[in-house]
Length: 128
Image 1 (spheres, one colour):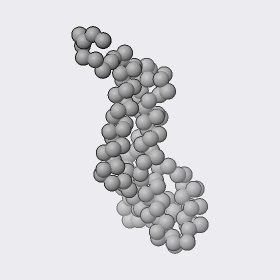
Image 2: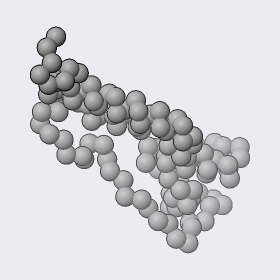
Image 3: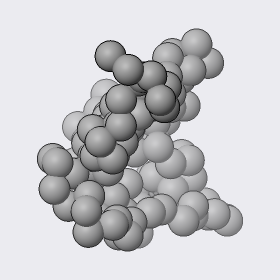
């Protein structure tokens, strides 16, 4: 989740269209509307009932992914890729945009690996 519970409650209370705001908050935080409702109900927001069943997705914090020590240098490519991914709301993007994002991130990672492993684009045995 990108926003804290306090931010979610504040944004909801300031919204003119409360029903629509729940969907907006869910999209922004990449969760289901039922999770937003559960947060609002947990904060005792008037007029919001907790959903009967909330299925929370397991989330991986970007800092909790184990990375090789060698990757702590070079501007930490894993954090850079996570930053790019976190700014993209996958649910609201078209398939074409998601595919372009995949191609872009793949190219970034391939360039990083070439640099990190001292590889070149020349086939083995070819002389320059």
